[in-house]
Image (spheres, rainbow, N blue to C red):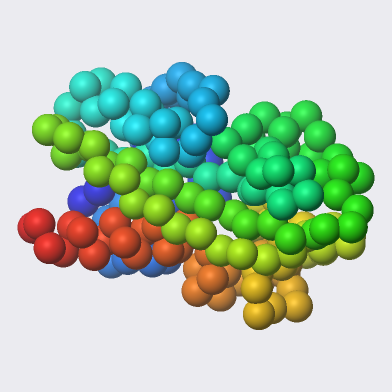
Length: 178
């Protein structure tokens, strides 16, 4: 069993589809620091949550990095999504639509925090497309695809996604140390 500390049911559903290991979602309402990297944010979350839960646990932080905006919103994606939304990002980006999604999983085993990263390059759609997924999924088209993440079923999105790649690296690590 693995404890995933998140209030985001969508993230937990995606992760559960990637493994047979039971994933227990816990919302510890930890303070998400504002930092310049996803690694700092995720590591801080894991360090906060482990002593409160008293069990090995992991947190995940992800962000959309737009080339035209020099990596913005990056680690500030959650705030930017809540304030500007997909429409706001599309208004800010006109010519260079290249972007990438990145994800960092921070796993605290009781003695240290280990980080696992995943990334997917792609482009921003011209308009919002799709009803599935969450966050910036309706505007992100992964490299090699013509559809946004929000137009894909979870299983298909997981084949491409930054979160899927980070979690696969995490599970590979667990299989080696267990």
